[in-house]
Length: 289
Image (tube, rainbow, N blue to C red; front, side, top):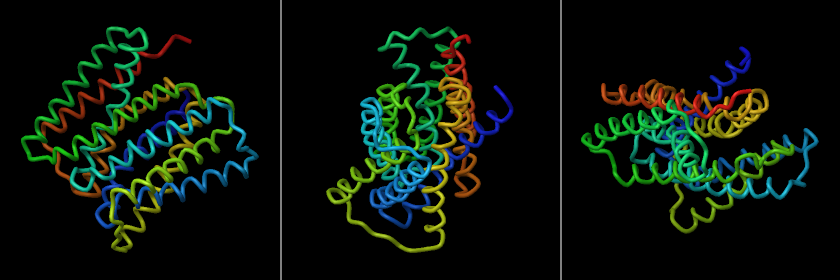
């Protein structure tokens, strides 16, 4: 792995993890489903516009359309929609930790249901992940965490896991930026319907809200996706996924720095264990060149 790929991977992990802090800021002053649907409208139109400027077309393969719809619904609408709702009562650091277990869940599901072989190192990583999550959940539940918010985060990461497994390799064939933009527009339409059905939209304008919304549209929403595709094309999906092991650390660090969210010793211990568990699973899933 070359030095450029390493720096890009670090940047991706930071951008992905910081999305939870910006989301926590947004939902403090705006209804979550409305805000997220607006974010997807802006990011999606920008993505499609960039794709057209790059010469990409709407003519996607059947596999790409399938990936666009599945990811648009499960990842953009269900996963992030539930996380936005949950972060009205759940801390950004906890939401980031739960979401960062996705590589562990993907590895476990691929091993149990898809027949993918997993080395002893990978099994040890899965066990470590369970231990780390148990340590953090035990501390947070004893501290009075909102159980409904916790449940929504859990369902969200399961939806993201299912989406990841269903569309593995389905985005190949070019037109990456167009696929990304259309995925976001699918999320926008789905969340707009959910807003009408389940939410009374409200917004309290402030410069903090504007800054957080602009950041989440442009950086985690668009730039991180572009960076991810570049990284996958550069070093491959499995090697790129190794950078997810940094998500628990970056997630709690950004939340602690910007939101002053407290971290106890059990949180730090759990994050450390999960981090090494994710790394172990990703290393174990890599195939020899």
